[in-house]
Each structure stands twice: as structure tokens, then as C-alpha cells.
Image (cartoon, rainbow, N blue to C red; front, side):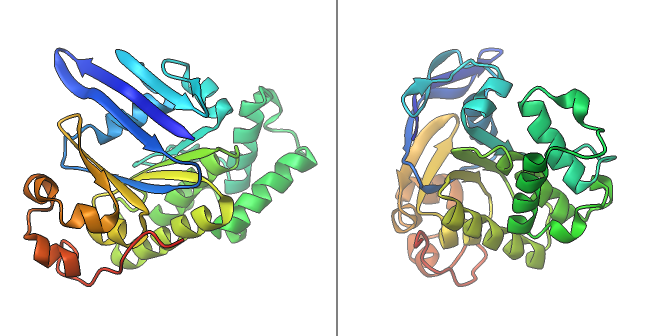
Length: 265
């Protein structure tokens, strides 16, 4: 589904991404982890068209989308939700989703029409119900809780029916209850939607619980990749990122709490 080949990007002579090659099979659920400054957000920016690579390819179903404008990348099937939700705070939840559909179809001038086209409203309703936002349809985005704002940001990507969905730290800034509610929602989205889903996450409990596979970046390079069990016991990952003995991480999360094995769909 998605493959990056020899992807590189430098800023002011500093290599943020260096000759990275990775595969993300269709329907997979993959976590991208690594220490601060590892290049995770740059990686997402390159895939989603937010920045152009210096070299390399981003292949979506065999088509190279590297360097295309972000709007075109979205139209081809790569959606993204951000660490800090990007919302039109004066619009309601439903208006935001309908607006996203209209913008995709170059009909933004019709955003304020009293009666949106039925297919727009139906698509918005479907996504709101999927994410549990249907009871908030008429609420202004700026008045939502932090957790619901993050859900709306995911909804804005999801309503455009992406083939690949990128989630940049979907649980950032959330308390424990909100965090696990969000990650349950993400897992349900993947299970029901048939998406190729890639997420950046710092919480190792979450990563080891739901990821099918894990890609580890460090200083812009691929440090390791494999199943959750393989990554738990990988000496280089333990040294560079996890920072605890393998035998401890094997049974427990980074904070010592019990971690179920991940990846079961």
C-alpha cells in the first residue's frame, strides 16, 4: 500500500531524514516510535506532502507522490490528523466535516448554504457516529473538550475516505481515561475501516497494546523494525529509547504497568 524508498531531508545541513526505506502493507496498523528529534514528524510531513524531500520516493499503491502538494496527496488517499488539532473553531462539528468535503471537491463557496447536499451530510453523519461525535454535531469546535477536538481532527481526515491514515500522537495532552478511550477508538477505526493506519506515539503501553508492527527511528534513520515482541527485546532500541532492561520491558510497559501483547486484529 505505502512504501518509502531512500527518503532523505535536511534542514540547514542537518539531516532530519537519511535514506529511509520502509514498507507499510495494506490494512496494517503500525506504530512509529523514537526519541525526541528522531525524525518522526518530519517523516509524516514528507509522506503527507507538507514538505518536499531532498531525494527518495513516497509510493502510494505504486505511484510516487513525493513532492506533490498536500491537497493533491490528500486527494490521492493519504489523510492525516495532527498532534495539535487544526480546527475552524467557529464552525460546528457537522459544518467542519461538510466543509472538508466541499473543499476537497472545490466547492468551498457553498459552505454556508442552508441545506448542504445530502451526500455531504450523510458522510458527515457516518463519521460522527463512528467516532462518537454525533451528539456534538451542533457544538462549535472551539467549545469541545480536548479529547473531542482530537477526535474531530481525526474525523476531518476520515471523512475524505483515505486509504492511509496518519495519526501524529493521537493521545497527546490527554489524561489516563481520555487516553485509553482514544486508543480504543483508533483500534476500532482500524478494525472496522480496513485502513492502513500509521501512528506516532510516545506511550509504550499504547504502542505495545495495539500495534501490529513497530518502526523505530533515531536521528533520522531506521534503527529497528519488527513485531512488538521483537522491539521489546531489541538491544539497540532498549539502549537508544526504552532505557530499561529487556527482561523488564518484556513483561511490563515503560512505566512498569502490565502490557498485553499487541497486534491482534
